Amino acid sequence: MVALLADFDGRLPSGYCQFLRDSNGAEGGPNDWAGDSLRFLASTEITSFNEGYDVWSSLPDLLCFASDGGDYAFAFDRSASSDPEAWSVVRKPLGTPFVEDLELVARSFSEWVESQFSYDVA
Image (tube, rainbow, N blue to C red; front, side):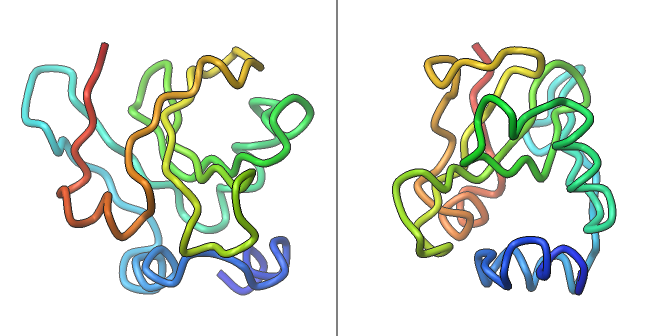
């Protein structure tokens, strides 16, 4: 996690940092339906995931940190605030570089935790 924090100038949501300290990634099915999956990346996977899906060349304010195990990633949207506690969580289709395709999941990581990591699939 030290390298991840260094990559982002020590600026990540505190609840997310605690989550990484406690688990350093996790996987499960928060919505309990067939095909449901949520995989939080380990801290050592985050930079390579974002680089591998070329996220930062088209959407530099996103930081993908989880996946649904299929065609979508979950990301922090850093565009609206420099305060990590105010970064919203968005769902991003992998392979598309358009901000219009982002779907708001929660206004913050802590709000997403409180919802027990729920998200709607369209």
